[in-house]
Every structure is written in structure tokens, then in C-alpha cells.
Amino acid sequence: MSYKLIVTIVPQYSGELITNTARDSGCPGGTVLMGTETSANGLVQLLGFGDAPKDITYNLTQSTKAPAIISAIKDVTGKKKKNFGLLFSIEVDDFIKAGDEKPASLEKGEKKMTDNNYEMINVIVNKGYAEDAMAAARKAGAGGGTIIQAHGTAKEGDAKFFGSEIVPEKDMLVILVPKDKKEAIVNAVKELNCFKKAGSGIIFCNEIKDFTILGKN
Image 1: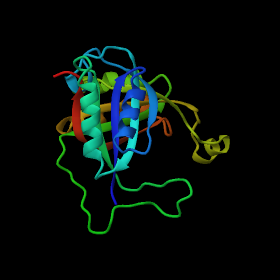
Image 2: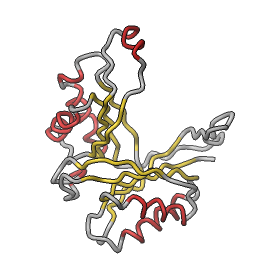
Image 3: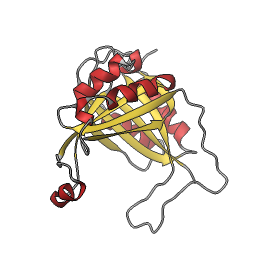
Image 4: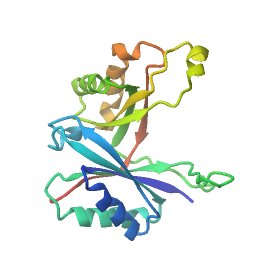
């Protein structure tokens, strides 16, 4: 059995609408995170969110149920203002629930689809440097991103072992970009001074699907 993570980025206090709609459409549950939009031009140069608090929702579901859930979210947000938010999905290789003995991986013989046009760049840096990373990404062609407050989990002893300073407070920057711009944006962020020191940050990327602008057409 395969799974999909359905992600939306919507205005603050709208996350419950998304997760409730997903649940009513067959999704077992969801998570709402708090973030901040970083660009007046909008993500992937398409939207006009402005610098405002955002809700980011994560809804994990079986791939076979994802189309109905996405359709329901699009329907309920279609009554909202134009450029209300974003929706996309990510294929999940392994899904582990507390108490499970082994992950629910893709069934043998299943193939992952790769016919997507966008990718999600995830940048985790020490707190205070996400704006610098976004500025570099924007110069390389990104339209905007969303900053999520986070924290590291390393213990004090790990700092001595790895020889780097542990900074618990982190910022996570999420940027959606057309696939052909990913390499240039990642390289631009890598060249920042805040990435020169070992242990100061990481970058990873995901292919995404079902990229949709929510709200009135």
C-alpha cells in the first residue's frame, strides 16, 4: 500500500478548515503547523500572499484516497478569495505509526510516479538565517517561501562529538520552485556564510505532485 502526504499553505486560522475537510473525506487525521510567508510576490512567483502568518497542514492518507480528499479541499476553498493558498502532495515511501513493528512501505512491484513540474526545497538553518537563505534563493529565481519555527534535537554531548556548536533554535524554510530552477537555487543557498560552518544547516529536496492554487479562479 502506498501513501501520500497532502500539504496546504493557507491563511492563519484556516488550517482547521482544511484538516476537517480532509477528515470528512476519508483522511484519518492531520497536523497544523504555523509559518510565515516571506514574499510579497508569492510562492513560485504566482501568488500575492504578503508577509503574513500562515497555517501549514499535513494530511497523510492512502494514495487511493488522495484524489477525493484533494478534490474536497479544492471545493471548500473554491469559495474563498482568489489566491487563497497552495496545495501539493508528496509521495511517502515509508509510513510508521507508533506501535507498528515495521513500516508500511510501497508494495513490491509498485512504481513511484515522477511526472511532476515542481519541487520543494527544505532549508533548515540556525534561527535568524532563514531570511538570508530566502534572499539568496530569490536572486536565483525563487518567488518566495514559508518559514516554520523549529528546534534541533541534538544533546549537549553531541557538540563535542561532532566538533560543532549546537544551536537548539532553528528556522525551516520551505520553497516551492519549478523543477528547472531547483539546482540554481540550492547552489545559491549553499554559498551563504551561514552554511560555511559545519553543523549550521541542511538542505533537502522533495518531488511534489498535485500542485494547485486554492481559492476562486
